[in-house]
Image (cartoon, rainbow, N blue to C red; front, side):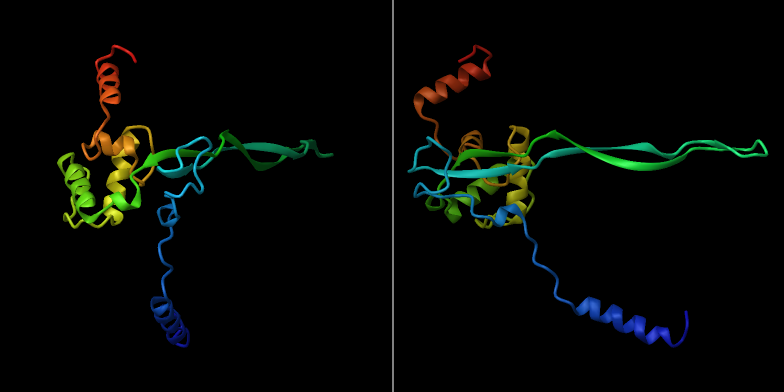
Length: 187
């Protein structure tokens, strides 16, 4: 490296290291719950709380060669191949969709409730952090992992997942129906 460039490069590296890092932004930070009937699915109970998860579109990109110029034969008989250009063609395989689900309301998400959630996830091998009663990033990752296996890819705890974890009580009829479905009897 050139001796005159070394101080410049070193200065740039130091400046980059001192630059403020952007805060992690995720869809978890977006307001997902509302117990006053705002931003809830159509026809839903306005006294309940809901989570909303946006499932992104699935896009498949294929490459294909497009002929720009045809193959030619020169006067001396030499053959020039066709000129091709590689072109990407995106195609939406699955449209983006919003998934609504019932969640425990903020008043239910007490430190004791969150600590119970962390213990329930820890017993299942999904959470390895300390039981703090704080719904931190590690807790949300474990919730997402648990719910993904149930068909919901969200870090916002659903009522269905809370019931499966033993944190929310089933009503009698719902519990009987769930037992029949689990036993393969149908609903």
